[in-house]
Image (tube, rainbow, N blue to C red; front, side):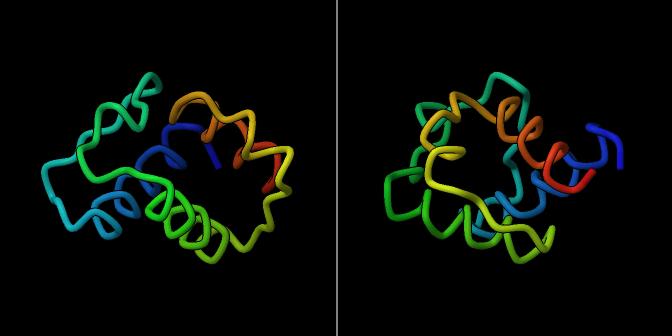
Length: 80
């Protein structure tokens, strides 16, 4: 799966979690860019991503996520 395909699927997950069809993700998108992205929504988001891609994040992995681009990189490595 390409990084572009992962980004597209993450966009759909973000739109579902935040109930906002207007969300457009870029590699530099952070929690500061999405109004309702708080610690609780971060957990919901990670669980939804795990279910969608059939992966399991480790705490150390997600603790170092800086933006959506690093999330794409992590998912890419885990599904490879």
